[in-house]
Length: 400
Image (cartoon, rainbow, N blue to C red):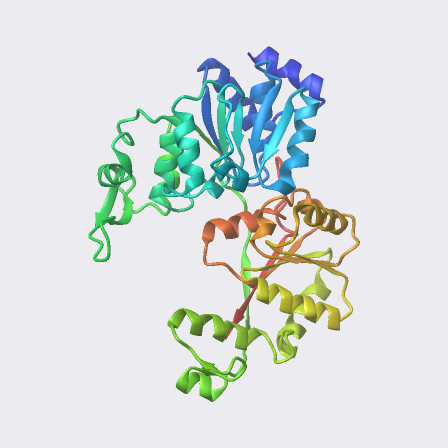
């Protein structure tokens, strides 16, 4: 098999990394039909998955992937003689969409199908029970820090495993340390029994599965916090009254969101001048174009208004940006037409190649989801062997 892989490399004009060769060798040695590529962002999941099919002489594949990534999959497939059809996770979920179980299936960004109650995962899981062609699931964060997501991965890969065959609840009680949930039948998971005290027991569990191929995340980076102080109106502090919307906060969640807006966004809809000054400084000291992340679209739009006021060349991409337009804007950013690219969680996918031309990321409005944050940070981290992380800078704005 080693000779076949070497010959395939010659045909592609590319050299596989050690972790890619190890997977391909195991794929053939064990005659696998299913596998999970649990690789950090930038470790070549696309090439590896397609090579697994190409080396078997397969010429067709269906890839479930974010729309912006479709052209990348098709171009890579064409180099290997594979006709790649791509569909979005949303289309995959549709009841009327039917799978041909004889066509190899690759599910990119597997976590986007959702958990055990998600329509996307349920559909894949049902199809997987009788799938006749190779099935590969790919994600940098398939566990999503959650025992339920671990169950979802194992059930697709090996539905007859004793660990998963009696459902999610049985899986949790068999494998996890739990405590009673006063508000529902599903217990609260405190950790995994085999790895007590582990920082990420879900990761440990997954990488121990025989059909999961895991590459440890060895990226070295530090996020530096930049506090910005904004005085909150007395009436909001005392009565929960927001004069901008002329309403009293109805819940703690609403109050939390409005407080964030009051601390970041001025009365004109742009960022407060002192917040803008801090961002202008960080952008000014950057030696490359800058990537800016906002968890909420309204914060990203306020940042865009600020960039207009500062006459800064920028591009804005959000979940509502059409896939074609997003692709065009990102490509222009890669080519240096913009000094700043600001976006929401949509930046986590479809932004390959930014590591070569972007050394700075600003988390203007950070996410509470550690798995998503790691995906975002991975957009600009260097790739390949002997990666140099020293030039990469990560700043996080802390409104207070």
